[in-house]
Length: 305
Image (cartoon, rainbow, N blue to C red; front, side, top):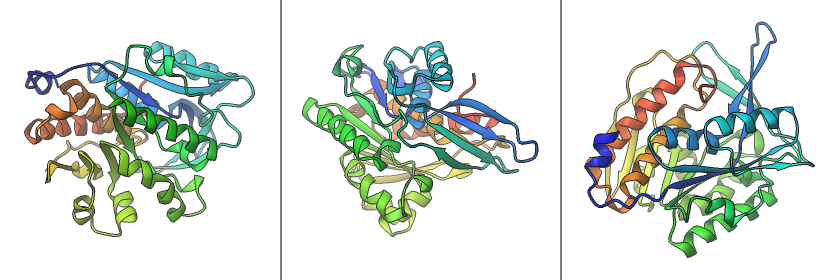
């Protein structure tokens, strides 16, 4: 990672702010019935990975004033990411129940109705706690709720008027929408406005109706990346599409692997400066991000406690 960053001689490192859900991933053992809570929420996981990459990173999200919320806030502070976690005294903390198969693949069911994750207050002082960010990462889970979409629109407007780069991870969760079309109708404005956007291959084909490569060609973002699981990722930048391979691992739990990938990816890009990253550097960044994603599958939970 250091060699990638040092290769950029004119970067302006300001730091990023990841905004969106922080929740408890409750992993359910179908054999014993045991349940164990872990730190979760894609934007929070992205912030952790971004910080691990060496980036100056902050996080803005909300938990309830309940036992899971107190657990998440304590752990977030241990990662140095708790200063801007808001506490809602009227809503409970969001829970995601995760079941894992023998290959480490997971399935989600959300306990989420009038919960805290999408009720974040737009607080400019918290977003700019360390100065105006050079990049804002926006989570997608909030977009199934009108309140969350209103908040996301404020974040987008802030980035557009302030000249702040924005990254967006589609992160489709079928459990939260009536159907796939509804979800992508809500995602589309943020996909189109993001400087950096991430899809899984299934998400990209669903969104574009095309093959992965043809779908990538239709995107006009500065940088678009498609994760391919064990096969690494495809990246489109400056009109070129290229592949970056991953390292082989035997996964224990794939929860948060995409977040570890994307947090590392945007963290390294932000450290170099998005306009300073040519495709040679971007391929090195993608390789490093693939490594981080693969390593995240070697333990239970999205982040190690």
